[in-house]
View 1 (cartoon, rainbow, N blue to C red):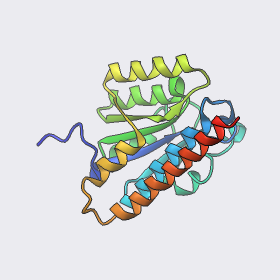
View 2: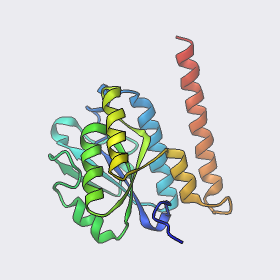
View 3: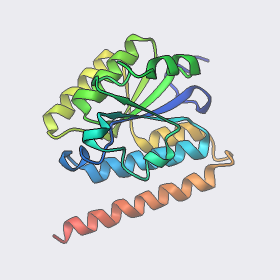
Amino acid sequence: MNHQYRLKVEDTALLVVDMQEKLLPKIMQADEVIRNASFLVNAAKVLGVPVLGTEQYPKGLGPTVEPIRGMLTKVWEKQTFSAVGEGGALEYLKSDARIKLVVVGIEAHICVMQTVLDLLNQGFHVFVCVDAVSSRYAIDVKIALKRMQQAGAIMVTAESCVYEWLETAANPAFKEISAMVQERMRQIGTQGNASSNK
């Protein structure tokens, strides 16, 4: 069976692009992006999927936000917009033999898109988590997602990734992951209620 289009724990890594303290306040739906990315990172750690990260000029833009930063297996600092433009990230990814990458982060139309296009050019299968990427403006997100998909990236959501990694309710991690899903739903509901009461 060809698993090119399926996410498997054993051949996938999660890449968190530039989710930094001084960048996020300017991003559309930043709270939602952080929540979904954090959910994905937590699930990846439970299931044994490596969680990698990049930081764009952290001296000026700050580190990756917590609690995500504390769960990153490896972090690369960079000045190129693409995560694989410098700093050894590409060499590491190639040596790790994981051919699929789930990508989250900001901004969708700059660092995320350039990273995804470069990874595709290098032969990786790239899955863009659409509910965990964003930019300052909606049009930039819309066009970036369209361009990445046209280039060959597969669009997914955080929850679909997690259940694809799980594969079956018989997975020993299913109960723990289910609790995380319920907590995420509670957070979404609480946020929705708060918004409707404004």
